[in-house]
Length: 205
Image 1 (cartoon, helix red, strand yellow):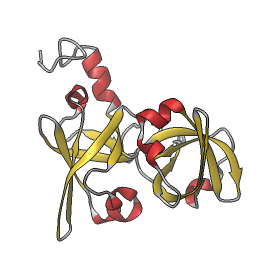
Image 2 (cartoon, rainbow, N blue to C red):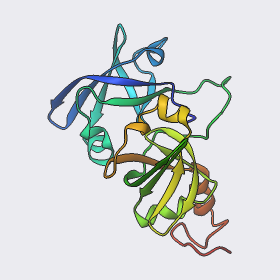
Image 3 (tube, rainbow, N blue to C red):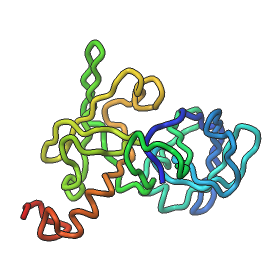
Image 4 (tube, helix red, strand yellow):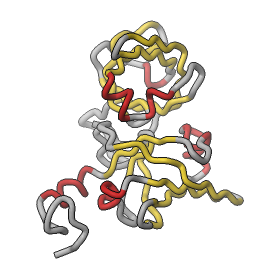
């Protein structure tokens, strides 16, 4: 379990492709401290298991499912990724509950910038838009964000300068893919029929 508060951006220093598997080597500073084999780390919002620790390099095995369903399969050597170690029971939850189980990839539809203003519009499959509500929470590449405007097939998030500096979201361009995890609370509410007649209905009771 994670909070979506990114600790740092790590650098991809090695990618080894095998049949139905990819080994990812990431150089980390803060996220590598105290991390050991078997620990969970969020990499661009995807919960991965550390398979090896060598100095400041963390290694992860990416299964075929992960490569197909997330943007991790599109990474190249030198790319920056958002890193967050798993929560400890004593931690403050500054973001929201993030499981690291990505729902799907969204696409950067548009980026609007001005002085101290950055808006990113993300397009998403319509079946997931029912979980996207204004002022609600969403995880993009592992970053906990508040949802702004919501439209039929896309939504906006607004990034403060700090977020642009400490995450890789400031490097995104139109057309880029991002890992999207919708709010787990929204999923449970809809599945229990509190706000809809079925998990797939938009109509409120």
